[in-house]
Every structure is written in structure tokens, then in C-alpha cells.
Image (cartoon, rainbow, N blue to C red; front, side, top):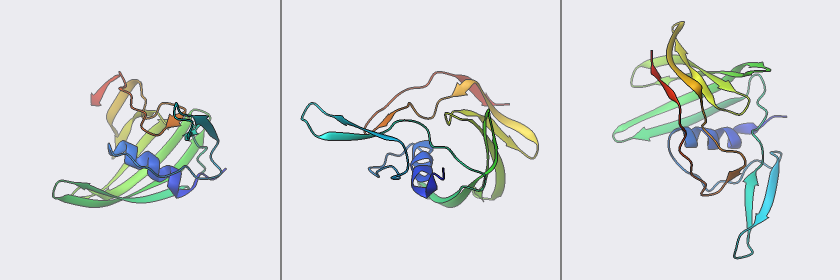
Length: 144
């Protein structure tokens, strides 16, 4: 199943610490739960299944810094995904993000070196996703 740029965009916004009111792609597994007021609350029930070649381009703005990044799934395995991240920060770079099937972060490599590792994996999302949901992951990790 191709998850498309919208679900990837939601992931990238979450990674950047932003929130989005965007709805999940129609092909993503969704549930509709009533809120106390009786209005439906859309949720994404499970992580999307990414495929080799899935690609997202996004822009990140932090203070005066502004840059564009491209993320592309370059490897899919039973244990997760390898995502190539290219951009300028402020110089051009290529990094590799190692992720589980639940889209938790295992860490990063750059120039063949591990630059960040997490144990246990850093949970970037709590499934099912719900609008307004917040959580604080607990993990050990950082630059190596």
C-alpha cells in the first residue's frame, strides 16, 4: 500500500515538533470515535506501510533558518525502514534514518558512521494517532 505524501508529511511535521490539522490519506486505516460532544474524531489506527521509493519533500523553518529536505525510503525489511534524508542544514548533507515498522527511530547514520542511536527505539508516534494527542517518550540516546 502506498501511503503517499500526506501521511509522510504528517510524519515530517511531527518530527519537526509541529502539529497539523490535515486528515490522513483515505487509504490509511482509520477509525472514527465519537468525542464527548458526539462529534467524530478521526484517528489513524496503525502506522502506514511504506514502500521502496516512497518520497516526501518538505520545508523546515526554524527562526531565521529555512531549508528544504527530501526523504526517500531506500530499504524495506521485516524490521523496518531505511530512509535517506537529503537537504541543506545550512550546508548540503545526506543522512540515513533507521526506523522500525512502528515508525520509531532507531537512530541516524552519516558518512557510514552512527551519529545518533536510541535504546529502546525513540517512539515518534503513539498509535492510534488522534488529533491533539500528546505524549512524552522515554529513551536513552544521542550523538555517538
